[in-house]
Amino acid sequence: MTADHPSAPPGEPAGAASARRTEVTTAQAAGATTQPEHPESILLDEPSTADLRAKVTQAWQEFARALAERLPTLPSGTHVELTLDPTASGTGDAVYSIGIDVAEEGRLSARAVGNAGLPDGYRLDRAAVADMVALGWAPPGVLDRSGEYFGLDASMAQSGRISALLARTLRDVYGAPHPAFLVYLIHDAEGEPLPDVPLGTARSEFGPGRVSEEELDEALVEAVAAQSEQNDVLALEERVRTVVSTMLKSDSERLQVDSDGDINIRAGSAMVFVRVRDNPPLVDVFSPVLTQVEPTERLYVKLSELTNRMPIGRLYCADDTVWASIPVFGRNFQPTHLMLAVQVMTGLADELDDRLHGEFGGKRFFGDGDKATRAGDGEHRTGMYL
Image (cartoon, rainbow, N blue to C red; front, side, top):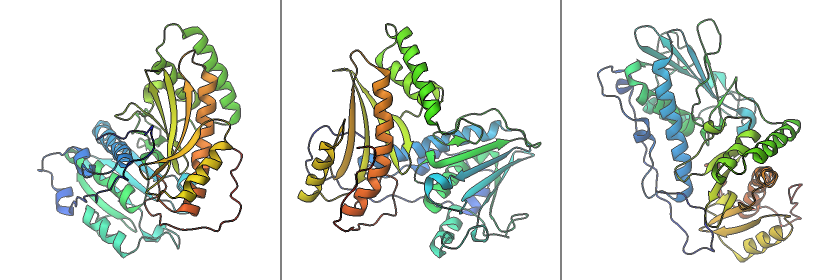
């Protein structure tokens, strides 16, 4: 199953199949004799699931796999904190988090925030509490020293299953749309941070923060210098990875690349992909701005209007998805052009998905709870990015 970025007008709208839920009971989570399972087998959706969901599913699989591989390597006394970033997810003062403690004799103890730790308007309803129990969590106060938190005790031999369970909790109950919205912290018994090992697209609390405009200017100079020195020896794909990693203040080897070879970049409530094409040499910076939208004449008129006002790129509808795309020439590749395209696209996607969703309904890429709504037909401001 691949998630392809359409290059032509739409045919028949693609359908979407229902996701299959896998329940994990408390007994299964706590039993030490069960055979470890691969985390991706629990998180995998139905094979017929529509295109874009494959990318999100893969990101959760990779997060669960990385966590499953990391847990057994941690020394006794280590504490791992997984938190849904409230500034990126729009959850305000609500902090949805899970703490994991590595105990002696190969045991794990996990505690997940309950309603006592959440403000009004963000507490779990009865269905969510039932989902927590179905996944394998004991209700608050049931397990020793769980207090107001949901509790889970298990063997380290079950790290694969437990990692998938934690990912399901963050995704399905706490509403994390993508692992890129997670922040993690790993420290030893003395509170000192342990060597950072990436957990998929989740961000380390001790890792590099968001890039400021000044830092982007510095990164631009570095990227141009690197490109000037290595232009004759680096392939286009490697040069693209160098530019993007420099922008993100990361190592090129730590970029999140999916099965299609696309680099994944989170942009608020949107996701931006960077794809390198060989023939002709081209770098495509694109984003699914809105999914499951009804193609109407009014929508096409609006997209045409917005495209005409964009200095670069285009907006179009294909397979019931509104796409934004900015191409960058691969021949005589210029790092500055790619950096501009990524900056414009991250801002454009994050701004337009909210505005177009309000006017035309559909679902944002990270909007599982979106419902089709209609806004007034007043003036539609396009913002600084157009």
